Length: 136
Image (cartoon, rainbow, N blue to C red; front, side):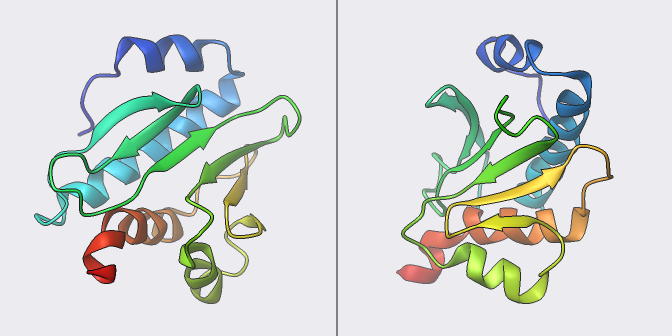
């Protein structure tokens, strides 16, 4: 079970539409479950980066930041963002070409009107949470 929301994250998502909040809760749950399934990842830190809920492997430094955000310019989607200098999304797209609407090497969008593709989200979370283990 994910930990309690940090107050700044609660404040941030409070302004989102209900469908975006529901999707965020589901994404967050998968991200924390994925981290808990790999002892090399350690405890996730949940913070705001650039005003967006972000998940970091601060304890072990095993991975890179994974951010989630809903934006008014794409009101029917929620975005999952990774560092753009990686090939993470290329790897995710190779296995899950229809799971997200991909935007280059930086963003993967999910429609708010559908259940999240948990397997694809877990794979993306695992890639982010173990990124530095693979590059060492």
